[in-house]
Length: 607
Figure 1 (cartoon, rainbow, N blue to C red):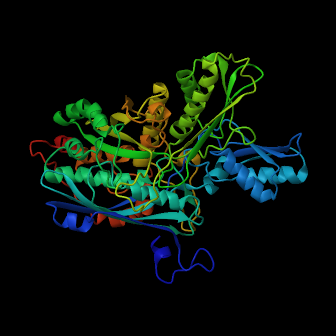
Figure 2: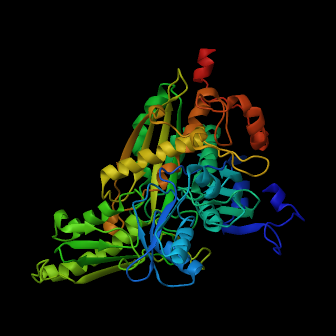
Figure 3: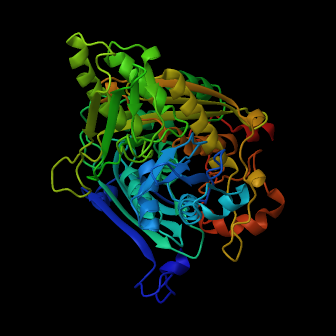
């Protein structure tokens, strides 16, 4: 990025003036003035690496010519309609149909097209069935990764630890192609302020084109990166003020009716305080016993937001089998959308589960319901489904049986209306809903390994509590790797060199206890009160783990994956691979004593 941003640098795209992919400037209040009058001011540099999604199923598509003469594509991706759009453009014909097969995970890595247009083109030309699948090595090489970020953040607090203002400058490397570099940067900037009640915030963000591999959507969508920096700085600020990291969050936490740094007034479904209270007993027990414990909070939007059209659509049709069939273009990528929609119908109609059929996403019957991203489907498509249920019940209340309703289409649509970024209104609605979370990491003081992670998440209404717990566990494990081991290595020729088995993914036997706490906070008036949980589960984990290791050995860490832990890999070639990445961080590193003089770190006690 530094080379790409330099004056006179060669441009990745011929004829371009510079290598800037996207630029964001967000400002509310007067951050510089607020920081200047603060009693405590901290400023640090943070870095996060490239990381790989490591979804279980590689990219695959099958295409053939169907009985209508159309190119029919079976695809495993995060939007059947996006595949339809791009295949139509590529072939120059509207005679294309797409249906989602079961998708073996995505995490953002299947938002970009890869094999689908090739399968469609080959089938179109050969008039024969064609299957195109990437090997794991090919997938690792070509699909977009999580953006690496460099971040400089300054925070000011008063004598009680109340945040007065935050300023930040962040940069991301989007590689040789845009992918979703612009939206990822935007979300990173809009959420960098954190889920706290202050209104002096300024951030400048730039995404650069480079000759590196492309980066794109990844669970957390930019917030995983900026949250690591903001939350780490807040943990340092707590020590400066002389209160616990839990207490500084409780004092600053956004509450119902409060105003976020982006100006949005939050509703009654705001449950950050409840997530803090849910982990308090475990946190206090470890803290008071001198056991290393770290903490991190997060918020994450549900729905696209910032004024971008975001519509959910569902058709409920009674078919020949006299069952109610669910048709929506929303892809189910393992998050259990089909189960959620069935449950919503059971909840909002008098039709039993045995008479409901969830159909795979397709593009000829099912209406477009947007991509499966942005933690949006449960809320946006769920509300569309609920509205369709109201129409079903109009006929049911008239006494119609499913046999008499056969062939009837009940259509539901919901527009998640929001204000554009920078809208000239006093309190813009950036997103229709936010989820909130608090996670704590408790270390074993003897081994230095993670003993337990406690993760409390506000989900509004838990439509399926077991699914929510699964999302929490999966998100935590994914970000354990992000925090402790994973780094997608690129050689001096900008070529990826990692193999799947060497990515640093956590194996099942290495995973510690994870205590998932589902916090239900009523107040959202759509989708039965449900707020998406898919992305936020991965966001506060890294700062919580990083804070725990500071409590363990007194070493501050400003880059991921963190160093000097029992989980560190490639220790023998650390000099070669890590020194450059952390050189700028180490200039700011200081070994700080714990604010309470009567406590020693576990390593000090050993010595």
